[in-house]
Length: 327
Ligand code: XMP
Image 1 (cartoon, rainbow, N blue to C red):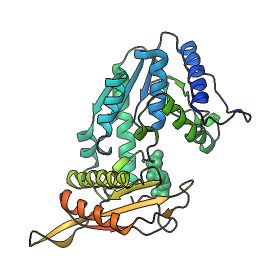
Image 2 (image 1 turned 180 degrees about the vertical axis):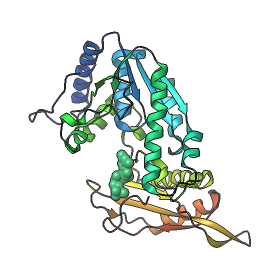
Image 3 (image 1 turned 60 degrees about the horizontal axis):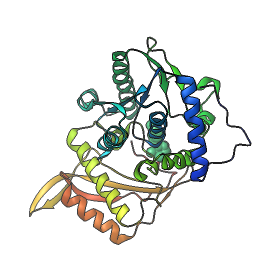
Image 4 (image 1 turned 180 degrees about the horizontal axis):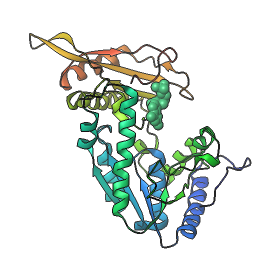
């Protein structure tokens, strides 16, 4: 696709009709550019890569090869949803790689946050590159780059062109069909493409996933406690009508225990920390005023349903002085 720059006069996509027009034009562009060649996409299940996948599936069907890498740090139900939506419902050419053991084995015993991030990032590239090498005849790499990514990239528009940090032997042409869209426009397009609401209106989720919320060295049991408590928090927020209202909410499990009582016995178990914040740009954030009854209900469920947890805490710290994630 030619390098596109968002024209200053371009109207913001806010309606289904505008989204349909964008979809039709993009499909025509993709067909012209790609012809009968094949396109590869790393499909995380986030809104940007999901919209790109849905656009390409409409445009070129099985010429798109989606690779979904499960690094074991996804939220409860996410890999299953990617398979259901793209493979079962859209009949996509989807390669699902469950690399959980590989990631968790590499992360075992590693407690430094930056080192954890680097291991997750480099292992992701390794796994994706291995899958890419198995495929012959792929010309293009699709990416869900959006306009703010271009604006924020350090050296501006030209320097943005690194194909996801892939090794030298993998040379693809980049296709970035949503690169001139803002996030809210990507969501409108995603909705028009028929993607489910919980994919289209998904709260932000860091690339290293639950790995940044399982503090210190990640263990499988504590990671499960993060995943299960996060699922309970999301379910309770949805039931209370807070799901689309609060900007970001999640749980954290630190790597220490405290004494508690369960079934009349003293038990050393982890605390779960709840975080729920509102922000415009993630540079500063305020804490959501969650009703006490809801906090009590979530506490009750987490302490009874999540293995190894005996306390629940609510983080009252705005950003600054706290960051949104703990790490
Ligand atoms: P902090 O913790 O710096 O987070 O206040 C600000 C926002 O960024 C998200 N975040 C990430 N998003 N990749 C992402 O796409 C990442 O590696 C990453 N790390 C943090 C965080 O969830 C919050 O919304």
